[in-house]
Length: 212
Image (cartoon, rainbow, N blue to C red; front, top):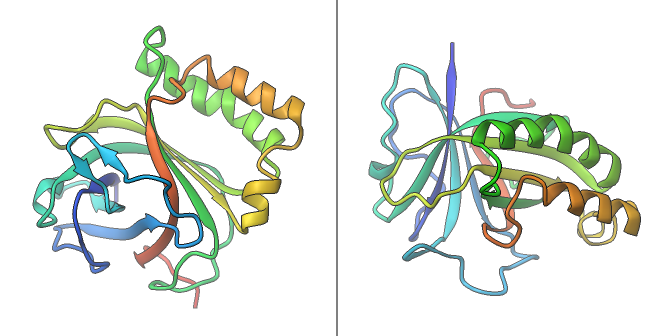
């Protein structure tokens, strides 16, 4: 069975229960982390984002994320690329024991969408593995298509997971030299400072496979 991943930013209050969606295979909720709250409101376009949801949907089902909530929604169909994985040992409904850095990122104008995706996955990922020692999980989501009319023009959604605050703040980079290498590479394909994101607390509401 082919499954498609949708990422949607919700611009209003919503609960954790999954919306009624045909073909829903898995569903997770990502809200501002209580220990790492945003320093300012998450203004995206004309809405203040309350959280982000991710839904994995069967290939035959319609994709209508604007109908999922009684709130404005900005949504994208993405190509999910898990670059660093961990073993999950907690059940659905329990917050993931980690801090997730969630970032919606645009490419630089001089790079095509295809080159952006290639560089991010094939050239940047090895640097991440080498120079981010505190990172426990890393997911790249390449934007395949916007699913709502007012979707902001971004090209990827990054999910960086750190098991502890210490890993996030003290072990984000391996060294000053490593930080410089990563930043120099980022400048080759990403528009730094032009996207948006927040430190999130992830909760799997319905997963395709759950540890007993």
